[in-house]
Length: 379
Ligand code: ATP
Image (cartoon, rainbow, N blue to C red):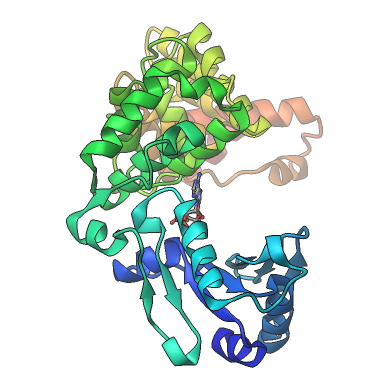
């Protein structure tokens, strides 16, 4: 569809950035970025009509637009020609040099390749900066020496791409990171932007390795102003942990003051609330002299799944948490509030008390059958 629209409007159109990189890595992703040598809004509108689905949003006067699809994927359109909107039909050499400029503003060579989609040059790779070579060599390479000074979030992005693909930073890129950090560039960065990049890292499977790498580079210490006991090493790659769970595990060794330092990030209210709740429950469990199942249940009933999973990764609680989760899974409680009401118990608190007592009796294996449960209830 993109090709038909590009040809019929007479625009040169390219797919650019992450999609091209992942395609060459034989790992296609769904989000598409188009760069149009022409009116970006006109291209987006025509493409939207051709696709006949999703939702189109036209942004600012720079000719950018987005089509969002119901499955959560999207397609972005940008124009190389926005500065000269008033003057259509610029010379082809000028157009080419604008694409080159657009690509030069990107973060790394592997993200600075474009793929032509017009029928006359379909599939042609535009690679001015050696992106394909770096993909083959497994290297993350910046496009110019001021890259990290210009935009310090690229330091976090470098780590993210390097660990995701198990690439390394090229020698100059590594030096560029060190120089930029030494110059204190992180202090130029807003909390929002640092947090945004940190959250992208949290979503990655190799989050723990990325975190470890950020520690080694000195990024974490520089940003938080102190050396925090991040618990990255206990986060496994092969388990499907959510961002929230990974976040809780990584702060599980922090004390109260250190948690406050971590919460200076611009996280969602929910993520902050959960971190505090996690620390509270962890402390309460660790303060118990013995952790039998009913005591654990007192602390853990009603606690979110994220927190319960994260507690399993605290070495001091691992065994007890696993026992507890297993016991809860096997719980055969038959009685409920409705049945108790039918038996003539009408007061809420009384019903709650009886249900808890029966639940704990099961957990402590004081009862083993529905018959025993009924007997206990009638006592
Ligand atoms: P992912 O697989 O993580 O989505 P992506 O490459 O698609 O990777 P995005 O963050 O969506 O990542 O960025 C899209 C493109 O925009 C990148 O490929 C890169 O070319 C460019 N880009 C994004 N952030 C920056 C930045 N801070 N500096 C320069 N270019 C950037």
